[in-house]
Amino acid sequence: MRITNNMLINNMMRNLNNNLKKMNKIQQKLSSGKKFQLPSDDPIGVSRSLKLNTDIAKIEQYKRNLDDAMSWLEMTESAVAEVEDVLQRARELTVQAANGTNSDDDLKMISSEIEQLKDHLIKISNTTYAGRYIFSGYKTDVPLLDENGKFKLTNYEAGSGTFSSHVLSKDEVSNYNVGISDKIAINIVGVKVFGKFEGDLDNPNFDSNVNGYEIDSTNKTSNSANADKSYLIAMFDSLKTALDSGDSETIQKTLGRIDKVMENLLSITADIGAKSNRLELTKKRLESQSINFTKLLAENEEADIAEVIMNLKVNENVYRASLSAGARIIQPTLVDFLR
Image (cartoon, rainbow, N blue to C red):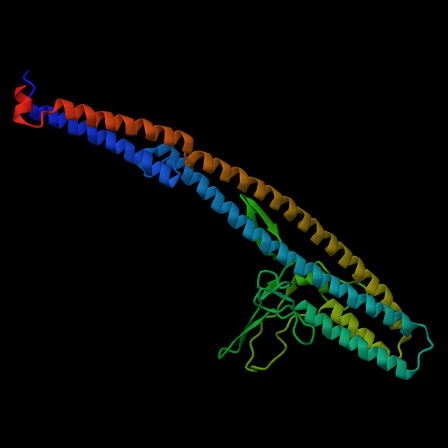
């Protein structure tokens, strides 16, 4: 077969372009620091990178959820500790009132402070974190107690004369995703802290569900749709009434009632502490996973710069050699062709 000059030129140009493409890819690796620029460069590597990036994004979201959950628990722990402080002060006042040496004015002063402590308890019950009520189950847009210490669980539908009820359960909690198939309930439902008054102050209920009432009424200002009163508020109301009337027996009984509530709060505090410890362990695990996955991603994507530079030099030499060989093979003039 006769080899023409055009065939030589075409072959040379094709080979030069191939060498130039190889050198361009290597230069892109060097400038970007990545092993591949397009999925076609390394389909398996690209697929692995997508999976690793997805896993890292999930871990970062879990870490944000975890930080939010820890802040929520810290706020809850602070609120429960504040309730304990209120009860401790109420106990001191009750002991003072029960010693039998107080004048009427002394009892009135104690009664006045008990009333202030009760109001503070209602305020604590409606503690918020980031605009959400921490003791209201998953209905975080609704306060737990109204100004009278009753569970505020109903919504009035304007114009219909109807109050719709809501059931507040001890199991009605907000769950945070802190890992794959790993959820943790971070809120303490208010009924476990403030209790439900069921007519007997000597038998506090911190476990039952709290049911709102559903009624039909044309009275838009009706308060009868509120649920039962909180046990703690009922206990403080009873103590205040006893102080105002000089009922020493009820004052004495209140000491035992306060002690029962304090025992319940200790149990709640222990539960919060256990959840906090679990979150701390989960945080360490997520941080370790984040480091490992980031390392794997770097190994999968990042190019070995020393190797890339060496390959670039090799391909530059090949390209120069191709140019030099082409210049000798292809005759630039007719005179050179006739030699």
